[in-house]
Length: 219
Image (tube, rainbow, N blue to C red):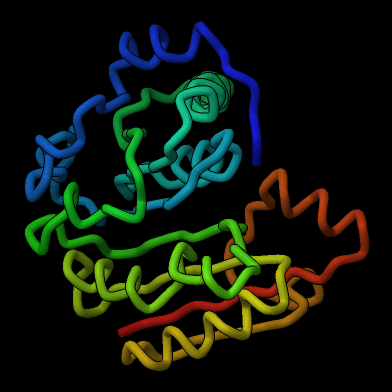
């Protein structure tokens, strides 16, 4: 999603106590950032405006969360949405950090010592042209990087509107030794598939009659 430059985003992020400006310095020690480092650690890749992570993290104070995006303007909006959601629930923001980084180089900021329990990938860029498939967040080369820092029992939660990305991703995960725990080609007609928090993209695609595809993968 393209978004206009927001001059306030960078200063607000740098002043925020739950924004990490140099994530490379936390590699292997992410758990130590949190008030309760013993909690499970979940990661969202490509958090956008933060609608998903603000709801999920504020609903689950028994879990620590990290959300990543590459664009300052996006993270600035995510920061404000997180503050709004936590304020509505009268909660301290002590189980969530956001950071800016290129997810294609994610193994530069996480290591096996970080022991990530779960990854969320919500409506990532489908990169439809064949020569760009390696940029997909579910591509084999990315899965290989995730395997370097997730726990052996970790799960990856994936949602998309794009049929080609969905079916290609099933093959990517299979080739990398992941098992399909659950999958569906019509998430909104499933009962108790998972705790589904609709993203901005999800609402838009659903309103257009596009079925949402989803899957849970485990090593």
